[in-house]
Image 1 (cartoon, rainbow, N blue to C red):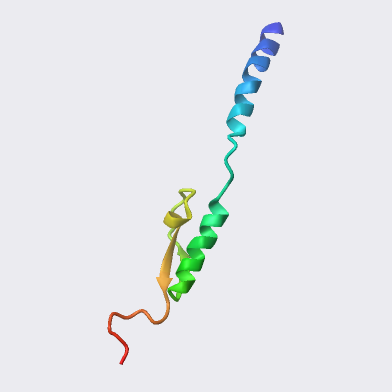
Image 2 (cartoon, rainbow, N blue to C red):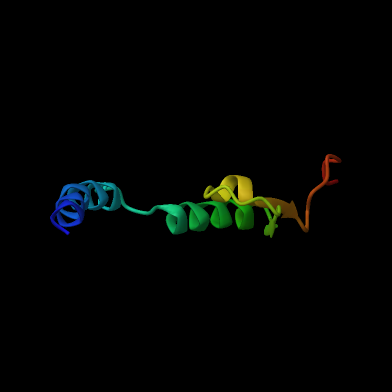
Length: 73
């Protein structure tokens, strides 16, 4: 019983160290920036099907209007 309690006491600080890295989650902020840039290009974000934790790989900007290489007259 003492060995189990000692093992728990020794691993508890390691577990909390992994849980609190001090970094903020910027996924939502990155997604908002990506969506704003896509909307500015007259596009809409569409999911790519990938799950990477990075919005730039999880979403693609599909241009929905005004996308032409032919210059307007």
